[in-house]
Image 1 (tube, rainbow, N blue to C red):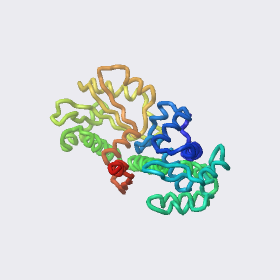
Image 2 (cartoon, rainbow, N blue to C red):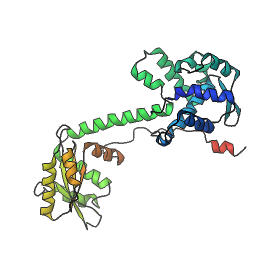
Image 3 (tube, helix red, strand yellow):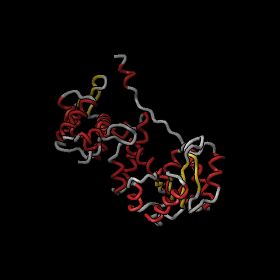
Length: 315
């Protein structure tokens, strides 16, 4: 099953806290048993690297603390407050996300420290209609919101990069391919690689580049600047392999801004003595971002987290 959103853990966490002291670790372990999560679900992680279940249980505890339903009774240890016991009586089966907003002082508690931004998000959500986007946001932890927005920005960048490439000339695309391959470690010096790719190709080959700095092994390159809907089929790939044989070369890279048909992908996997790597538009954009070709870092944001080990040393 899908891992529940963090607010679904409000009720089970509060129930545990009414039975005795809990820690984030012990609460997570008990909830894993209660929900019978599979090993795959237990090990599932957010893009930031933190365990999804542990992250959501932790945020559930944070929200319950801000609401005054559980309180800290020892280092890393929490227990239900009298208000928490009373609240559970009126919510015996489930605690809806909006119920905590009704508790006096809950929203004000978020005004301290780094949770201030979360308070503004909550306020904005309460003023919005219950659109699908708003519901998704309210069901997410701050870590998940950050990961999602970073992924959104990356998607926008990918679209802009592809459009920028397609707006350029074929000659510019050849230079771009060269820059990417050089950044990935091919070609030795840029001048040597440029000498190879700058020449007009033979038999449909756009150029060749050194696999190593000394030029002991060479790779043929085919570069096609196509619109996304111009899918490259098996015949084009098969013709490229034939060209490699005519040049006495056994390795090649076929790079395109579009994509390859399944028949083309299957063809290069058949175990030929000629090794071909197919790089589609999505892979090309990924390489560009990874090696910072045509992009630059616009902003760097450091997010700090409490170093519990530092404080545990004093116990």
